[in-house]
Amino acid sequence: MGTAETKAKNKYNAKAYDQIPLRVKAGEKEKIQAHAQKKGLSLNAYIVGLIEKDMKAAGDT
Image (cartoon, rainbow, N blue to C red; front, side, top):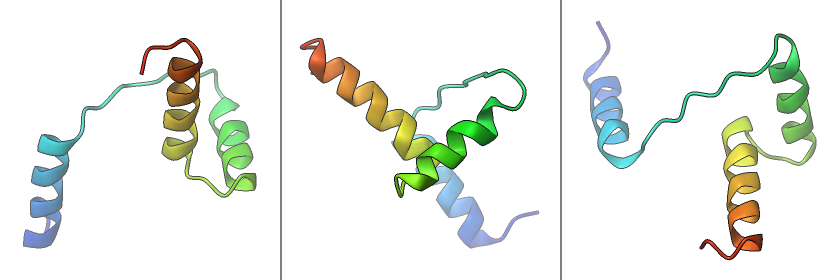
């Protein structure tokens, strides 16, 4: 079982964030993650940033 702190974080995250499962070909995750790290970003921040940039360019934000 997790600690009370972990349970509290999980409860907060469940309320505050949606999750989008993403599948990539085997070996691609490591390539994408390495590229994100070169830019000083986490994998999540990199993917979210790309989505936001694309939506902004399309006028959807």
